Structure formats: C-alpha cells, structure tokens
Amino acid sequence: MIDDKMKITDEQLACYLEGKLTGEEKQAVEAYLSANKEAMDTLMMARYEMGFRKVRRHFYVYAIIGLVMAAGLALLLWRLLTPIQMKVNITEDKVYAIPNVPFEDGTLECEYAGNALQRIPITAESRTVFLNDIPYRLKSNPVHLVFEAEGYQTIDTVVKAQRCVELSIRRNNDLGVVFGRVCDFENGQPIEGASVSLLDLTTTTDALGQFRIEIPFEKQDEAQRVSITKEGYQTWDELYRPSATEPWLISMEKEVQP
Image (cartoon, rainbow, N blue to C red; front, side):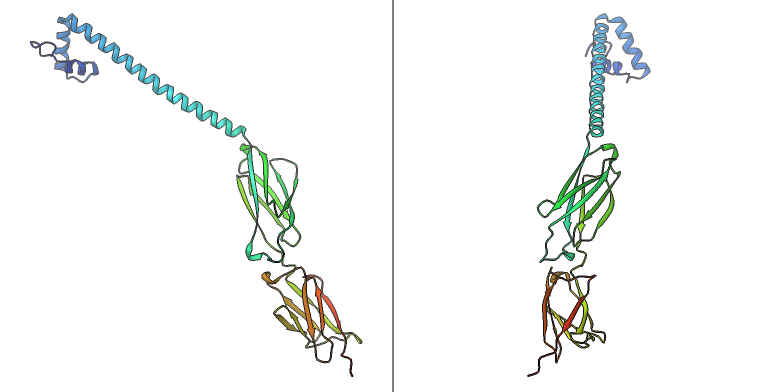
C-alpha cells in the first residue's frame, strides 16, 4: 500500500501503467500522483523500465526473425549453387534372369542438363552410376538414359533428375528358343514324326520336318544339348547355342543295315 488515505495500491499503479483502469480509477490515480511527487517519480521510473524491457523484447524477437530469414536465404543459395548427384542403380529382374548366365557387362548412355552424351561401362561388380554436376535449378528436368547389353532388352527411357533412379534390366529371351528343320541326309526330304528332346522338353517334327521348343528362363543356357530320334535313323545328338533368329538345319542318316 502506497498511501492508506488515498487507498492507491501498487497493483493499481501497475494497472495504470498498463492502461487497465476504468475512467474513475484513472482519475483517482492521477490525482494521487499530482499530490505525491515521490510516487510520480517512482511511476516514471517504472514506466521507463517497462518501455526499456518492451524495446529489448522486440529487439530480441526481430533479431531472431532476422537470423532465421538469413539462415533460410543462405540455405536456399546453397541449394541453388550445389549441383545434384544422381545415382542410377542397375538391378536385374529375377523373374527374367538366367541363373546359368549371370550378367557380365553392358553400357549406359546418359544425356542431361545440356551435358555431352556420356557412355558409361557397366560391369557385374559395378552396377551403380553417379551422374554429377546437375544444377539444382534443373531438378526434375529430363535425363535421357539408354541401357544396352548382349542378351538383354534395351532400355531407352527419360526420367526426372533426382537423387536416385532404379533401372530394372531383363533378359531378351534370345536363348529361349530352339527351332529348325530335320531332313534325310541322302535325299534332303523332311522327316516327319522325329522326336526332338532338350533337357526335359520334347516335341515332334511336323510334315515339313520342322520343330520348335520354347525354353523357360530358369532352364536357359548359352549351349543346349539336343537329341533327335526316329525309327530307322541314327540318333542325332549335338550341343548348340539356342537362337531366336537362326534355325537349326539337321540331317539324319539312316541306320546301317547288318
């Protein structure tokens, strides 16, 4: 209590400084201050300290906001000036893989961000390619990728510039077909009904002596043993490389009569 007679309390003075008094309460406090110089000096000092704390608080707030904005701007500039490194992983689709013929090598052609065409070798030990110096501002821009390898389907695709890309490669099934024609060695006439066997796969030749065997991926190999039998003929048994484009032309000799 500052003055019992006027009944003006410290709490009322604090509310006066903060502008929380009613009109009558404000008039009472001002009358008290006019009559009490010491209380007026104390109030002015309190008002000064309050203003100083308010200015200091605002300074800290604006300083923190300024620092946050400066850090954000610095991060943005760093992102814009730092090029992207794009990783391209070459993985083999197991559904179309050949266990007996693992991937050995191939090439990956890359063209992006105005850079010259790159031709990068891919090996069984190194199936990851890193494309550097892609400006951040070109993020999501097109990157042209072409994968080629013997025995595999060609991949020609355009992807967005990004941190990581997966390319799933597949065998092209060149080793998945054996086809051809079986003829008589002496007269060249087609042999109908000859039994053609490859592993556990069998078929018979048609009226034109033709045959065709489809080999599933899990049984494919770079060389296959084919056996052909026909009553009255010597068994034909050879090891050849399968081909989806080159037919096997097979001549069977008649059995030698005793």
